[in-house]
Structures are given as C-alpha cells and as structure tokens.
Amino acid sequence: MNLPATKRSRQRDRIYFVLRNTRSHPTAEWIHEQVRRLMPKISLGTVYRNLDILTRQGKILELDFGEGTHRYDAFTHEHYHFVCEQCGSIKDLDLPPQTDLHDRVIPFVRGTIRTHRLDFFGVCEHCLKQQN
Image 1: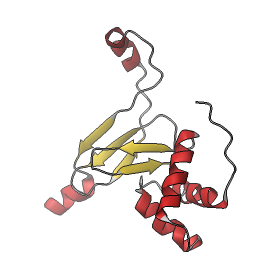
Image 2: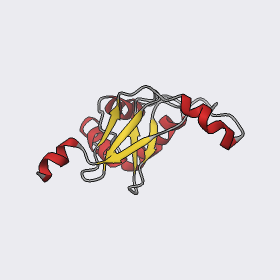
Image 3: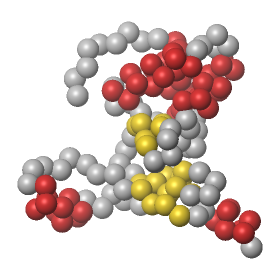
C-alpha cells in the first residue's frame, strides 16, 4: 500500500519503541500508559492516531480477537497466535506459516492469496495450573 509520506514524529517513535519492546500484544490504553512515562503530556487520541499511521505504514499489525478492543503487534512477519480465553493473554507461536493452506483454499476464492491469519483459542498453561 503506497501512502503519502508522513513526517516522522518523536511521539510516533516512542509509541513504536514501546510496542517493539513487548511481546504482550497490548491495547492502545496500555501503550498510552507506557508512553506517558516517557512523554507525560501525550494524549490517548495521539496514541490512536499514531497507531493508525504505523498500521497503514505496515510497521505494526492491528489485531482483533473478538474481545471488543484491538491489540497491536510490532512483529509483522507472518505468524500465528494463541489466545487464552480465561486470562486474555496472547502468545506468538513459533510455527512456520502453513503456505500449503493457500493451495487448499485457492479453489474457493477464485483469486489470489497473498497471506493468511490463523489464531488458536483455548486455555493457557498458567490458567490450567490455577484450576487444579
């Protein structure tokens, strides 16, 4: 996607820095809390605007796991996620992309497939231990 050039900003750099230094797939609110430690006057609206720009630039992923809020991921390589339905934690899975799925799906879309997203839902190890 070709976007018009966007001026670099200190705020956006800090938001991206915070996001690159977590593997937790945070919400905009969490990112806002972290960036405020570095830039106390930054508003939540500014964080949302910059997350949108970073997403459109392809520097981050905006993820929707059906929980009513979006999560963000600075690791944009193709990868899968496991979502705990109890605690809400999201974990990157170290599993190579299953590109053979493209060949299996192509007859149903009658077009081209560039990429796919696959998420797994269940109960994480930590929550299972707490149940016992």
